[in-house]
Image (cartoon, one colour):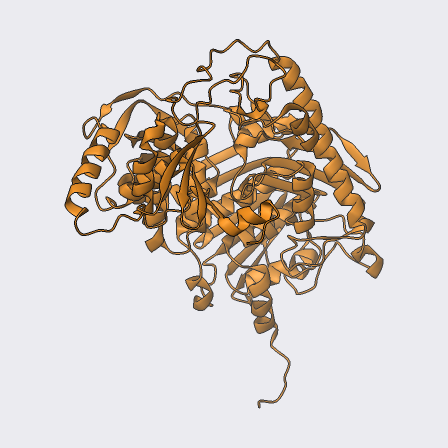
Length: 633
């Protein structure tokens, strides 16, 4: 075993850089935080080749003297801590004094700075940890730091970086976080010599959010009722359920102007909503002001996570703020859309041929036993906010809102008009004729008994009773038949008015990366400016009410696909899953079709659930039924 020795300063800084400098966005984060701590009112960020070629951050902050400029690149040199007590009441974004020496050890680093009262500024250059002699420089008041050839001397680290497009999207996301935390500061961002955005300073947080998202999102913001708890205050904005994502990309949480990611806060947000659909995360902009003595920010190398000294107070305040806001907004919306429910003519009670899902009325008496949940809900074009648990209990299930629905004017399909159901019936008949002699009918042991409330088909089997939901079954059947045609491109139709969407930079990068797979699935998506895409055509079988929601759903699934070789399958199956669902639930299925549907369902590869995971069949065994009646099995 080698003898123990002290690492050289350069090696120690490069080791520290492994924690501090993960990717170009990490460098931007540290440099922008220093600018904000210096009191800057204008921060300009420029990058090339995703930040690997060059990162430059310029500010109009306080600047530094020559002595401070030389010291700031030394390890553990800082102006923000002078005693142990201050470590537990941190009010700055940075405080460790590790960022600049770590960055300088893995790049070609140049710092130019000047204080307002000085006549000349100073330039500090460091190449991979090797310091050059400081020299005077004529620069504007403030500080400009340039980081070139990141990881040039640690090629193993550079191999772990993603494409320039992906790295640039992470850099832009980091700048957006700081811009949201400091609306009173002007931010400008240039990528490869092209201006991406220049955000003027504003005192209105809604204006800053609108500039970084879009006008429709800003219009949908629900102001959080300012809530004050022990040592903490909460404010911000919520977004309706339609903006929920399968990832937390829509959640922006700030604690004392610091972007944070914390499991405790995440759980409190869900509790504030009174629960949330499984697999989805609410979108919101949450701003927390916490007394510095009640929070420890020195628990994560990148300072993303925090630890609260009185976590129960934090959770209770967040829950109260969100729940009160939702309840107040729900009451306002309910009063706004309240109207007498129009009379409806339902099929007569004695009808036996009503399609599945269209339940005949048993009585027109308001006090009848007809379930309220089964009655059609009154239509409304108003956007519906997510309700709290108490509001949901009072007013019944609330359908997802159709916020910002985008009407799609379509022209005839580019590959011919499809009569999907006729083609499918012909194919079914042909396959049934060809395979009747060679395949055993899996539904032979099922005896059709009838229907339950014109909604579920009942079958008797040797093991007991089976209930089938015909529309869910049809969803699975259509999905598997479309999937069998995977090699052929999905027929598409052009849009008369292409749909233009503004996206998060990370979502935009994913869409550009997987554009060929979108084409295979029948959706042509092209770049249309910075973080903007244009949907030029959609699959012929798909009717989109909200193109943005559907596209973001697909992006979230692609983000979770670990390897690009799976991306094509994920994209295609997401599309055909949506086709199958929309097609099946629009069908009018007569009860006499139940045996044929069951036969097709049992021929599927996965017959027991829909592509979305909902059951198609529910089995009640004879022993289970006997136990219900207190009989011996």
